[in-house]
Length: 242
Image 1: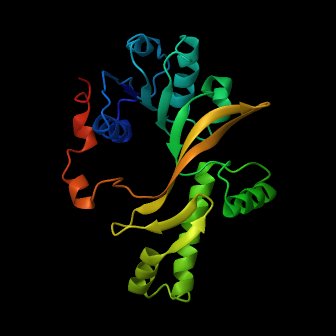
Image 2: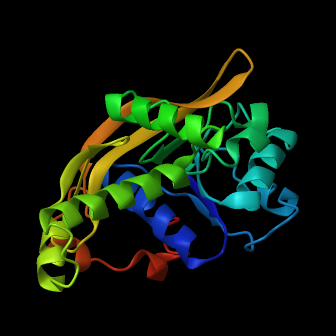
């Protein structure tokens, strides 16, 4: 595996999670490449990718993600070394990537194709109100508002009862568009994470779920104590490749 992501802490954290899980399963990271955040020309970095790699694990966002995916194809690497990543093909950038993104596998908590009754209702209501399809940021805002609303209901709107409201918020559990949502003891969300593959159906380029992991915590398979005793991913930049 080659790790390739923008040279900033979010990329170290996201790719560190991939690298740690991959290496503990018996895989090997053979190279790390970190283009500067905001790179316009990825050619010098794409040229560095070892051609004996089985996969390139990435973290890019926004315009960086669009440029990387399109230039990866232009450089002739698409179809030769597959790409995986966290949220690389999110809804707001996927249309701009077009066919260059087909085949990319990524992980995220929600896409329009998630097949739940709650998601179908959410998609229909959002499209009716805003006259455009929902993207992941819209679903995140909706789920956050749902959690707050349910906590307010539990305290009968008494926001002056701060302790009661916070206790109610911590206890919230409901089915959102992405699946079941609740919070852990550290107030971090526990929810379904979907593994997606970009496919073309007619003229549409879509993220389609291929497997889902319900009740996924921030600690994955580790206990909180074991995970927090590990070296932070940001400190492992440049140390994964063997």
